[in-house]
Length: 401
Image (cartoon, rainbow, N blue to C red; front, top):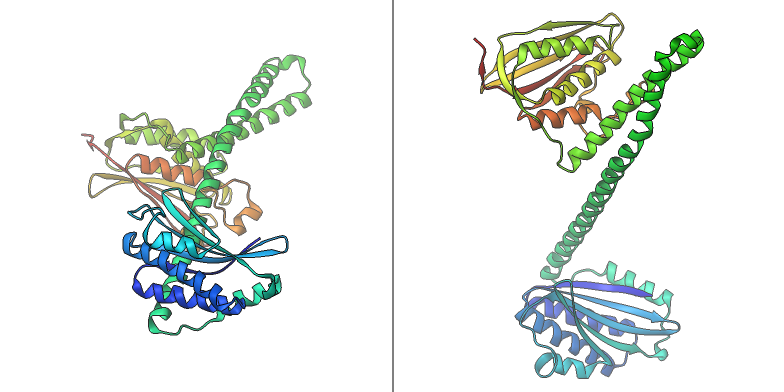
């Protein structure tokens, strides 16, 4: 078991004073003999001076270790590789003579010095006493303005280190999750393709099936299509995260493309009135299949979150900077300003929506990445109980005359 009592960043000569004070104070709390305190403190001071002078920057951590019923005191000093020499002469050689154990090693581009002395049994050290000592150091008030500034700076550095570690953990977990999504999606695709193929074959042999069997097969086929789309979305998410969302761009007049695409998608939402109002025509470099995903995600969401027989309007216009804007307006439930800020986040689903509507929260995230991949932007205006309008832009090459 190892207990860290105190730590100190070594930056300048003032820190030698702090290192000396803290080691002397700890020696007193441990009831070490005067000679023991002096030897340990001197060894720490010599090594810290060497680090400050030659490495410019280092870290001192003083710890108490326990092995069975024996305790030992260790000062661990780490610093970036520098001109500091190994023991043999000078400060480090002197420090080595003052302690019972002296260890120096390199690890991950850092050099480390460890100074260790045994804590005599006569001090009657225990875990309870160690906890009291740690608490005493934690509550200690700074004895000088420099120490006050130092304590605040060290606290900020520690917070920054914790936040950095949290970020690294988050990145690692996210990478593993993306890897899992990719593998799982590929593995699911194979049996699903088989299920769908045999279902379609069975439907083609409909003359040999009862009406009930045909109905069951039709439902299996419909649900297989839905599951296939979900799997494709999972694959797209993993591609986005891996930076592998490829685009097959081709020069395309947009008005005809939008009419055909929206008309095709509107057949899957026959319960709503889809209107198309295109403005001046332009030609742009687009991936037709990927852009169809954007229209499909937004239009199907518009239908999902609005009443049957309500209107959905698709409109276009030319914007400054050779940008072509598409807007898709619905008369649905709308969303709050708080949810608008997060609607394009991966897997985001508003709490009130998740309770009433199915979905994984991937469609709009993928749509936003596809639009970004085309060099455009996507955003939303919305009002609760009034409806939403999604806008996205695409750079165009020239107008069609």
